[in-house]
Length: 286
Ligand SMILES: Nc1ncnc2c1ncn2[C@@H]1O[C@H](COP(=O)(O)OP(=O)(O)OP(=O)(O)O)[C@@H](O)[C@H]1O
Ligand SMILES: CC(C)(CO)[C@@H](O)C(=O)[O-]
Ligand code: BAL
Image 1 (tube, rainbow, N blue to C red):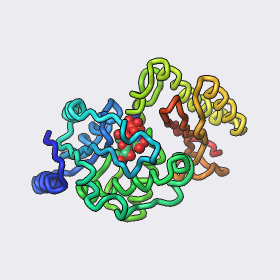
Image 2: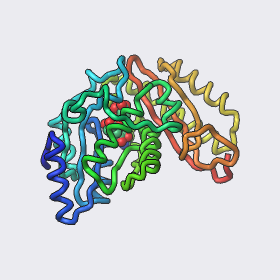
Image 3: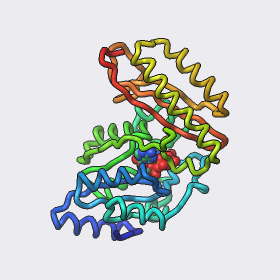
Image 4: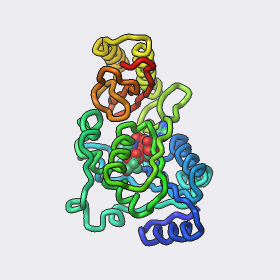
């Protein structure tokens, strides 16, 4: 697996793969790779012939008081993981390569509607940063397909909407969340947690399961279900950001007859912000 740092080298390597008749798959990441990322690369390797992964901690999607500076950077271990998962090329640009004119006057992509609320409410500008950098990566690589994790459920919805609205000829594949045995969704930010906090954080997935099961069993008092879960989170030492049930395709508020639902949670444990979600189908509709 080659690692390249410039757009010029990236384009040359992809052009060569294309000239050999290969289908191109892209897996964008911010590095500090775990088994969740490996699953995305493996999926891309199944569905395409030449897998490009990117590692770029994108300053544009971080708020001023977020963890841009301390976000873990572990290039060597990441390269090994990518090789093991079947990646052919790693793009690892620096900020100047990605934003040569600086970020201030960079053209931006905004995706209204689906970007609003949930993480969009607590991280203003975040999805504009994500949509902009993903568009740039799409234009640099021009992949046939790109793989993203369902763990970042709203991000996946934003990207699907952007691709549809801007007629980008790229198939978007959403991969299920890879979890620890405890149920905790794997995330680079879990590295900020102590062993005890990692155990505490498992309450989030248990709540998602409980809420999904209760709705499937006919419970419709969502405010009560959510309040009960939030009390448990607070008792465990978590600070609530949001806990909501939405229609899963559009992320709009639930309406009568909806069948595809998703429960989404974000909460702080100390300074660490954790997110998780669980989607499910209602046979009879909501
Ligand atoms: N547990 C997981 N299972 C499946 N995909 C995942 C998982 N965690 C992250 N991903 C996906 O990997 C891609 C890159 O995400 P990113 O590098 O931000 O990793 P992360 O572990 O989610 O980090 P963070 O702590 O910043 O959220 C995204 O498409 C994301 O949805
Ligand atoms: C998609 C992404 C690589 C864009 O920076 C990032 O938001 C992530 O890692 O999920
Ligand atoms: N995993 C999404 C990237 C972010 O939290 O900034």
